[in-house]
Length: 464
Image (cartoon, rainbow, N blue to C red; front, side, top):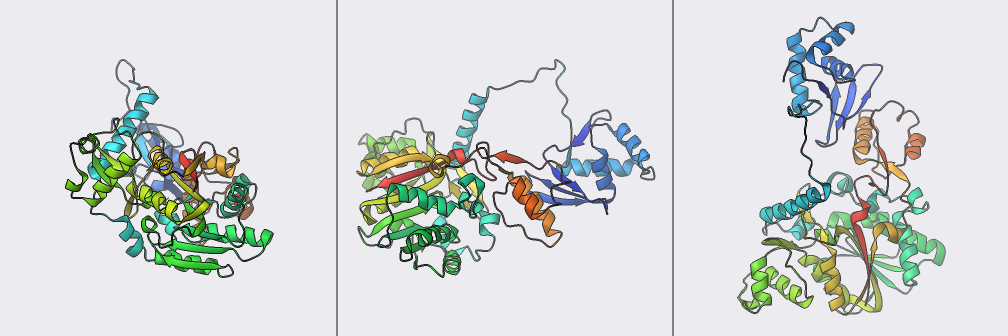
């Protein structure tokens, strides 16, 4: 770096200086790394309270009685801290001082296309998400905090944003207002996670209407089934290991089907745009397509009259989600209801979401809706925010701040469950915790809710 170039702390980092030891606890949001800085590293961090160059920093260290460190020592530490991303050198603006700015709408469209392109390029048909959930999840402990964090998991306890109800309780209220749920109904939850939604859903029903509602979990992951059983011992619960794309239930046997934040895990297929048009225009017979999943995708695109003219030459198609709604039609009783919630898009094409150990693909809801309607079912579309009636003015902790506090508490042998904490909740739980950390963020739900932008979560209410 140039001698007169300014260096400063990474503005996105969170940190806490422990008065007794002088240690600096810091968290890097993008690297998701929790670090403890001590000795010269801790002193350098505190000295960089404002941008300065090497000479100015040396003067600060002398003022801190650190002059016994030679310049070479802290230059080496500075270089290491820059490499870690803890601090950075301020960029030098060109001689004319002009910075090229791309209008945001064009930048957003470019990034969307880039995600779609890379998702198709990196797609591997050899990876089987069903097998991942069936065989590769060996513990439920921490899965929805370390692997894939869901909205319902973060709001599994009563919350101010939901009128002091939990996610499951509020879901019951809303579904019951659309179709009265009675004790002689059969409810199936597909992919029930650890069982928290069901526990609060059934608890609400039992308190207000008495016990007796038959509730069935259908999940590929046996470790989740174990958690579901443990959490719902007092309820009238049944369990099965099953694939949502081929539901193990009889025709017209289910009154209410719940699939919450699950269909992005279903089978995705990479399609060739030319192949699709050759098929739609009659130049290609589907029987000549060797890949069964591609063949099924072509048939569904024709069935739903789905327009893919704006697709890239290769694109991702949510085949599994469509096979699932086909199963929904089969198993629902006439007049039965299905609640389907997931993150996704109304325009464009699915792109990859890389999680630990596996890849999901967001849902193209416009395609899904067209298929449902072509099947002859009715569908109502909501944003999750509107459907559950979130108070979007409530502020909840930012994901990086939550991880920073959780890691900080681990140094004190205290575990912090991952929840959508408000500032007052954390202050009540840990009265002294929020006094000293720097850069903690609490965002209104309409901006961002912990790990999620709730504005891109949609709810489909499907009626047979």
